[in-house]
Image 1 (spheres, rainbow, N blue to C red):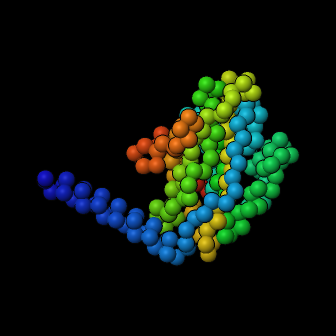
Image 2: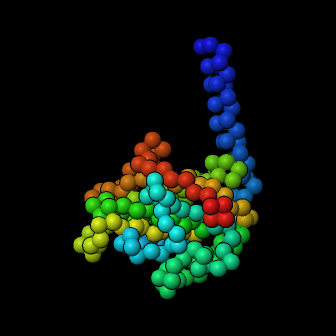
Image 3: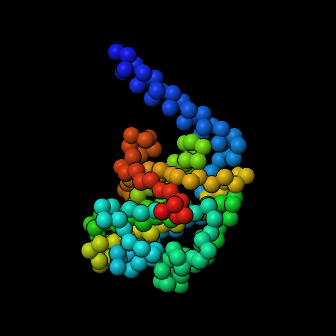
Length: 200
């Protein structure tokens, strides 16, 4: 191995080691992250629940809330405010944070996205949140060609230290066996990254 490759390898190992140390330090300082409540809604793409639109080159968008927005109507449409989303963001109160995301898909790939297991720290302000992807039992009620799954979850963090960034690792659920494929990182079918709403 030449000197440049050796230095590159050493740097990569040092970075990985530092990330692990930061994650361990965060767990020690702030405790573990616990999933609290969550719900997903699969709906036609033209029935919007979150303000704004998807990026031109992506079918995913999402954010973390460590504090509630000054006005939830900056985040949710009137349709969302009339239903189960009303006041959900008020749960982001220091010891809790909220994850909100949407995934757009063609009808034939319809799926619900839900938090699968408890998240974990991967760095000082970074978290890993496993997400389970499950097809609906019946596609018949969904007549639109393009669907969106809107998901919101709340999480509790001991001693109040919400992450500012998170990786959402998506696993596939097999409804026939009831098992979730993807418990190992290499079995992840998709990874999405989210940051704070305030930083968008």
